[in-house]
Structure formats: C-alpha cells, structure tokens
Amino acid sequence: MKRDSRLSGVLHILLHMARQPGPQTSEILARAMETNPVVVRRLMAGLREQGLVRSEKGHGGGWVIARDLERITLRDIYEALGQPEILALGNRTEAPGCLVEQAVNAALGSAFDEAEALLLRRFGEVTLAQLSADVVAMMPDATEAMTLENAHEA
Amino acid sequence: MKRDSRLSGVLHILLHMARQPGPQTSEILARAMETNPVVVRRLMAGLREQGLVRSEKGHGGGWVIARDLERITLRDIYEALGQPEILALGNRTEAPGCLVEQAVNAALGSAFDEAEALLLRRFGEVTLAQLSADVVAMMPDATEAMTLENAHEA
DNA sequence: GTTTCATGTAACTTCAAATGATACGTGACT
DNA sequence: AGTCACGTATCATTTGAAGTTACATGAAAC
Image (cartoon, rainbow over all chains, first blue to last red; front, side, top):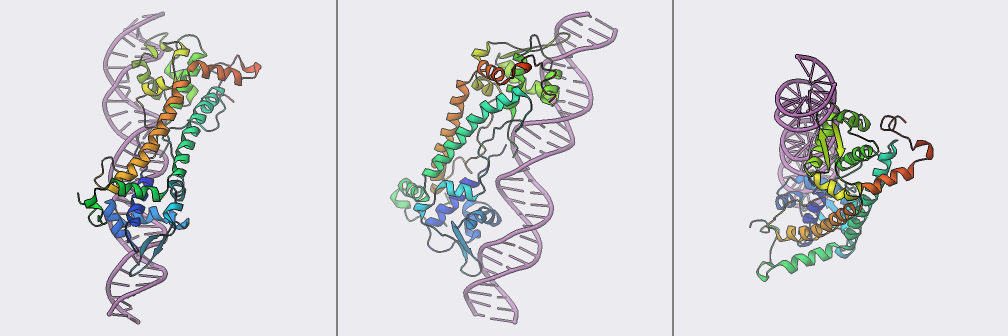
C-alpha cells in the first residue's frame, strides 16, 4: 500500500514558505515539491479552512502563513488535513458477532490506539518554529542564503 | 486506502483452531472467516514457514498449531506474515537532497519509529494463550460449548 | 474594460496493495 | 483409481493517494 505523504508534503511546503517573505504561488511551491500546482492547492485547502494559511488570487497573489510559527503544531496541520488514517493495520470487522473476533479486536485495538495516541502526542509537541530552526541548524554557513529557487537543484 | 487486516484475520483463525481438537481444513476456517479457502492458505503460508503451524494434505488433513500457545506472541505472527507496513503515514521522499525535506523527514521519522516500536513491543507482550483465555473470560457459561460451526451464526 | 495572473474545483487517469476468486497441480488417504 | 485437501499461479476487484487536464472565479495591471 502506498504510504500517505500528505503531512510530509505539506510540511515541506510550509517550511519553504517560512523561509521566503511574501506570498508564494502554487506554481512555485509545486516546482519545489516536484509535483503539480493542483496538488499543492488540494493540500493547502484544509489548512486555509483552519486559518493556518491564507490565499489570494490574481497578481501578487499566492499563499502566506497566517499564524505565528510557534503556535502551529504538527498536530494542527495533521488535523487540518482531515486527520488521515495513521495506521495501515486494522481490524477485519468493526462490530463482529463472533466472540473470538471480539477478543482479537479488543487486544489489537488497544495496541493500535496506544500507538496512534503516541504519535498524536508527539505531533502536538512539535511546532513549525522548531522545525524551521532545525533546518537552519542543518545548514552549513555557505547555504544560509539558500532560496526556494535553488533549494532543489542539488 | 483499506487497512491491512491480515494480522487480525490470522489471529481469528488461530484462536478458532485453538478451540478445536484435530486438524481444521482451509474450507472450514474460511467459512468461519466469511472468506475464501485460498485466502486462508495464503495467510497461513508464512506461519508454516516459521514453524508456527503445520499443514497436511489429503483425507484427515488440514491445519494444526505446532507450538505451545504460551510461546507464540503476536509479534511472532506479525513477522511470519512478512512484517506488513504498520503505518499508513510516511515521508514523501526517502533520501531527499533538499535540507528542508531532510529536516521534515528527521522529525516525522523519529515519531513514526517510536510509534512502530511501541506497537511491536505490545505485540511481543501478548501471547496466543492470553488471547485464548480472554475469549473464555468473555463467554457467558452457556456458550462455553461454542463450536467452530455455530460461532458465527449470531 | 480587457488582459493576465493565480486560486478553486470538478473530473479523469494512474498506481499500489490487499482481498477475492478461479483453475489446476501435488500429495495423501480410502 | 478416486477423493480430499493443500500449494500456487493468475486474474479481477476495490480503495484511496497522487498526478493531470480543464475551466470557472476573482484580483491586479494595463
């Protein structure tokens, strides 16, 4: 099964936006992601509804982050994406009549729930500001002037 | 995408087998699972290779559990299934050149790894014997004589 | 006001992997 | 020999993400 990379993708977009002043177009962001502008808009639509970003049409339009980076957690973003399925594993039947299957569901279900809860807790602890600082920390001095245009040329 | 229910399914099969003496055919087990005998054989193939179950052809043939229930953990079974993907979420690119994406991968990746490790640890702590005891504990006295044939009629 | 730019969205295609089903071969028991 | 049951290849179905095309809407530039 192909893994859902929407969270990964949208974080990539947001961190690039955070490093650039002014609005960024879907076109530019899509090039950075090596994908399609429509994919970018689709990803960002949920974030806009939650007030995390704003978009403007026409000349000089594009996307801007609408909240302090310190006040946006990965969990906020995850939820704005519509809370995609976290686990690839699941129970066969949700409400089985068979007692055996009920016992299986109970055992697996609690393990699944714990793993999901752990991940969501982690997401809630990480802000965009931290991630953005991580990027700077990873940069050799020479690349601190890295721009959106050359970031993906290597 | 649809969640992978192989672990759930194979546990259901094994617990039914544990409650019945003698070999069970794929045909019988498939009826209990409301699926196809071929699906059962496919699920069980990995378990056989790991020595968790044995199969015999011909008259009187079928599947039997080949190890003490106390000595089979959910993790053993998970691994016998070929260690299916646990998380539905993942990184967009595995080895990105872009520093921004590297930072995203590092942050998400460690959270993903922790969640997977938690689930695998849980799996390692649960044995088939415990699950089988859970089933009995869930049964009203009247149903303790439940058989494979009537377990799914309700 | 018309052109240009950029988003908003619907509709379609592609892709991957589990699941389901059919068919046929192999080996074992009667 | 015949029947039973597993072993396995092959194909169809299903589901949702991802990619693409097309066109409408609205804003700025001219």
